[in-house]
Length: 339
Image (cartoon, rainbow, N blue to C red; front, side, top):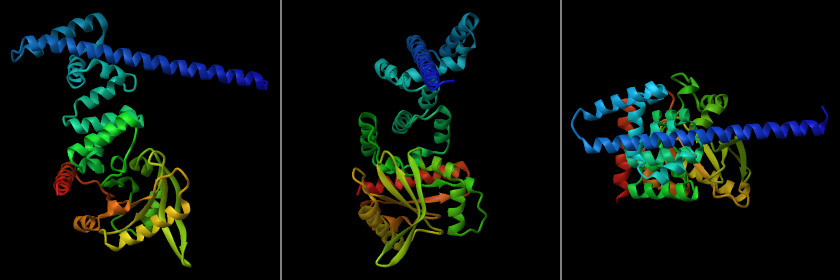
């Protein structure tokens, strides 16, 4: 096949792929809006008759009729989902705009999140990060919202951060960095060294980047920097595309210690002076420890130095224990922010 023929064929294939995508997107938008209108209609009928068992009976009648005529897509579960999605996304214009970006399955999963700010977080992250429904499900299951720093801020701050993400696609470190990080996939034994931890992360780098977030790009391991004829080594160095900055990651065994701050500050100042390029923001440091000393972290005021501290878990605790731990951390942080 000659070069001109090959180029022509590639263009045709690109047109087919693009058209197929547009058709799928169009079908999804039409289907989502159909279910929204069905949900609206059902909700309207139920509001007119609020007897205890009326809703269940009415939906059962509607479902049986529609299944007979149009197939299984109108079972009771889907009709309840349609009504729930309508209740959460009542504004038709907003829903229509969102339906061009998210699938019906996205809406269904998000609609059942009871906390409005948490729901808004997952909605905006789905749009911003282009999460698949499987990714959304995994993020909810791993309690991503509770683990991000944003959840530990006052409600008004959370609203403003999400507004910035929604209107200007401006993302902040608080929406990205998590605590704790789940590193249970590393397969580490009960006793291990920092070198073992680093080696395990590099061996499972793809899965580690998924836990970090899709915008992280790996740059270097044990990056050597020389200051006054003394060599120092940054454990792992990343770049974050949308934050537009370098991220230095330091791995530590045991609990956080005050001395770690000075070490990370030195790394960040070096990166700021010698590695940062025009258009980039100041580097951020992430110290991963197996335990946190909250009062140390509070008194050292690390965020002013562009430093984050997070725990890592190599074995996942039971979900109820994790929920309790995270909710306590959120309450503690929000109380602290009030003063």
